Image (cartoon, rainbow, N blue to C red):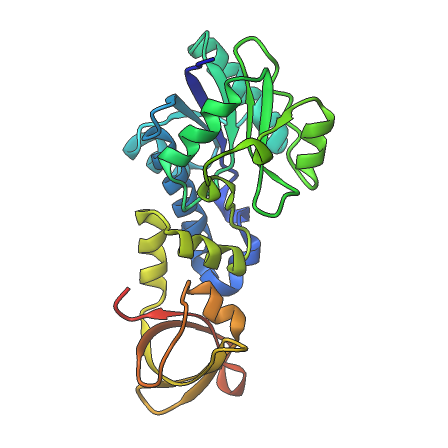
Length: 281
């Protein structure tokens, strides 16, 4: 069975987005959240199974980039009552604007999303009235679909995978013959961002991370077991980094003398590295 898909991507006001990445991005957390959404929407628009993308948002910066530059339809979030009401509203607008299309809800925090992998998931979903794809952890949902004329019935939130299964949506994860890791890798934490970086993030996310980590340092020590060690700043100051900071940069290993770009937080004796990546990346 084939279906032309219209995807609905909800983007909350950026000031309140991705709070668990505050330690990594600091005051530019909203910019990083928008970069995630931009890479998600750009990949969705490039997917051969997707005919249109509607972004539900009332954030002006998100609307300007995702609609004005990338070309998605911007649907004002009415009445701004949370994620599931936003999806109901967006799905209704999409069904009215593109009658006959199947509707899919797509998470906005998939910075490594690959159009071909999304196409695999949607092609499988086209065989069921409603279906969902669990996130990498298996507890959340990154894609929820409904064929034309079928209610989307979004139940996103804590434990959404179980909620969508209970509502009758067919789970897709166990049926996929091809790897669709990029469709399942949503990002809320530094560790999840590290996994997305290993998959390969889009240009918007990569650009923000590169501009965030402008301070350079030299690797002094690295323990491959704990993935921790220390770096020397150009003034000779030695700063420690832990496994989480190493993982956040998507690295596999480091060696003495390598140049890295880092993010730090804290002051004085409490200064620590929260992110590091190779200076050449």
